[in-house]
Structure formats: structure tokens, C-alpha cells
Image (cartoon, rainbow, N blue to C red):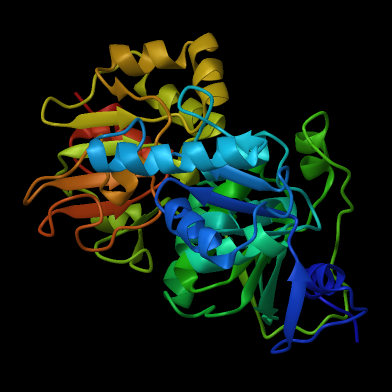
Length: 423
């Protein structure tokens, strides 16, 4: 019997020939990540361990992105603690405001997440790197402290659930819609402690930006990781980008999986997840007409250049609805600069959007777009729990950039194809 991608990657990291679902292993970590919320806790715990230096100054990334640029004194103190630790430990991959980006967009962009590797991060959406064929998973801050000290961590090998997408994506339907549909089918715990593996001709036809959106939200179905088999698209993305040698890992054809789902996308509409769960996915036509106050296009899910291009294509030459606030947040400085050079920022500003420097900001209700009582938002972010973006009596509808941009123009949730009817 063969092994899955997940089993092969974890076996290599553990120095074993084979591992099996349910097995407890101790494995060497290739990269460890912390941000301005989770790293301070890890740093305090690291200091209690009694070691003087981190295990490897080049295998730790510290990225202040959640409450940055700092919104208040407390967030400034958090960022200062991380900054001083990075300087003291000579952390190579510390990225300050102005040089940083949203962590899960920045690490792949910098070539710090690679196929066949084991990566942990003190942030649940670390699973984003699975789009590169990486086993990447979120951990707690104390686990991050242990890895910073030792370079190792224990894992329970998860079983694999395979998702196969067949057919052809209709216009305006993207990777974000595929993952919202998946979560809608599985529920928030349908893949609990499993590794989701996304494959099939539709996945093979997606660019990396669409793949990152899919892997990013694997955690919303309860999964430990969300992997996509590396292929030529992956190799092209990493060419000239990868910071270290890597070896792509593919699962065996005869590998046993816990479950397999096959879905045809020929008739799939863009998806919208209604409050208060990402699992409440609906075709956009079923929620069309819902009045909105704010739209956010950005985050580690959909702040990449293809997302911005899709939104700009709809916004060009138009202005957003008079009662709507549109906030656009490129995920990294490089994406921001590319959007500037392509004229996308001009399109957003002429449409009367507010464009921000990279930050997680509104996604977690941090800053840069907090909702008041009773307000409704469409967001390309990854969670719409009660109070997630502000007041407990506000509401967030999750969607891809096309639905988000179209809805900003209409003042209500609409299918992008309906834009011809917008005054």
C-alpha cells in the first residue's frame, strides 16, 4: 500500500520510512512562523525554557501584520517585543512595516515555503502553504516556543480526505468559490484532524493565487492541512524565488484515503457564505439583493494580484454605491507595487475605494474597517463568525473578489454578470 503526500512529508521529517494515520511522531520543522499577536506569547515562553539562542536564525519568520501599522499603545508594545527579540536573536526573516506583508502571502512570495517541507505557524491559516505541496499547519504559541528552541515538534499523523474537482469553471467562479463550496459540503468539522488534498483537472488549471485561496481555508473545514500536488505551475512560481533547495513530494496512486469526494463545477455559481459560519455557503443567486454597508477586498485569502485584477476589471470606469465603503488591501508590498504599476490602484481610487498598506486589519476586527451595530459587509476574508469584524450585531458575508467588487457597485449582493443592470 502506498502513502499519501501528507504521510510521505511527515515520514521524511520524522526520519522514518513510513508513517500511518493516528501515529504520534517527533518531526523536524523546516520553517516556523509567528506574528505580532502570537509571537509575543511564544517569546515569553521561549525565555522560560532556558536556552540562549533559537535553533536556526534562518528557519524562523516573524511578521507583524495583524495590528500593524500599530493601532494603539498595546499593539505597539506587542510589535516592539517581537522587533527586539528578532534583533537580539538575529532573526533573518523579520519583516517590518514597509517591508512586510500579510504573513501567509509574504512567505510564499519570498520563497520561504516550499514543496515537501513541514512548516508550522502560530496562526491557524498557516495551512495556506499547502498550495505549494507543503504540509503546513497552525499550532499554539507554546508549540512555536518549543520549535524556536529545538527545531522539532510532535505531530499526530492525520488521515487524508481527497477532493477532486472536475469540469470547467464558469466565468467569475474562482478558487475562493471552490473552497467555500467544499466547506459548505463538509461543514466546519467534516475534515476534523484530517489533511485535505485537492486535485483534479480544475485544480490543475488554476494559477497559484487561486490555489492559495483554497489551501488557506482548509482549516475552516476542521482540517490540519490543505495540500495541492505540486506541478509545473508550482515550479514556475518558485523559479527564481525559492530560498533553498526543495524536493517535491507526490502521493502514491494506491495510497489509502479516509474519504474521496468528486464534484463537477460546470454549473457552479460564485459562492457566498452567510453569517455566521464559512460553512453556510450558498450560490450567490440565493442571497442576491442583500443590502450591504461595507466591502473588504484583501486578506491572506484574497489579497493577491489576480484577486485585485479581477476586482479592478469590474470597477474600472465605475463608482461604488453611495452608501457603501470599499476597502482594498493588497496583501504584500510587492503586490501593492505591482498593482500600482498596472494602474489598478488608480482604478480603485477613482471608484472611490480606500486603499491600505498591507495589514490583516479588518479581517479579525483589528482596525481599518470595524463594523458598527447592524452593519453588513461582504469580505474576501476567511471567517464570518459573530463579531468577527466588529460589533456582535454586525454581519459578514464571505465571497470572492468578483462578487465583492460587483456588490460594492450595486450596494447589495449580486452576481457579477448582473453589472449591466447597475445604474
